[in-house]
Image 1 (cartoon, rainbow, N blue to C red):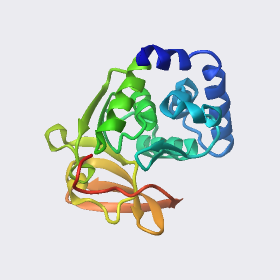
Image 2 (cartoon, one colour):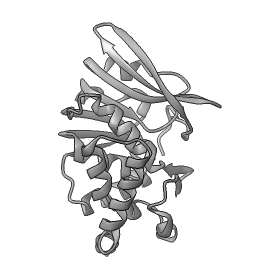
Image 3 (cartoon, one colour):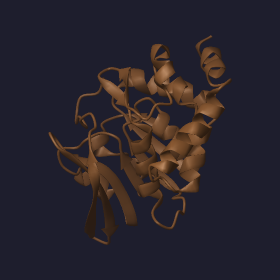
Image 4 (cartoon, rainbow, N blue to C red):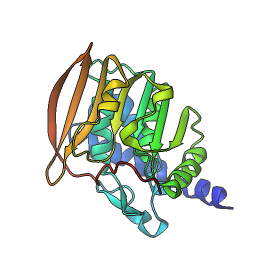
Length: 223
């Protein structure tokens, strides 16, 4: 019954709402056509509590329970655009740290070949699976685990995206990048900066993008 409910919530006005959201994001500077199309195609309202559905297509972060949030659509689109790089070429193997609601996962799955996603909170992972199944996305593998450790058995990755703020850059994630691969990560505690870190052999170059605010990337204990 829950799956049917999600599917019904995914129909109706959601397509038009997604298209309008994509137009808003384009006006705010998101230019990659793959990312904009994925935003337009994604029913954001199914990834949030039904009581907040009327705010689903606002450009704002919203609570999803367990002390977590679904990111602002602009940030989701921006990080996805950064992941693809200036060339706009889709990377074949992506690691996402922090599945959360599954909304960012759904965007990644539409612009890349394969997404591996790690979530430390089992209840969120379970709900995200239901939503992603309702969208008929099948190029996603999910793991209940510690995001600070990445997913060693599936490495290396063409790109890694972290959807929580890390106090420092996890070395394990750097080690799991291919040569030339990029890590998109918010770094900091009270103040966070979104960074692009690119691997060049055993060295890494860093680019700061903009100030952001994410829930913390918690190491260790799984829930």
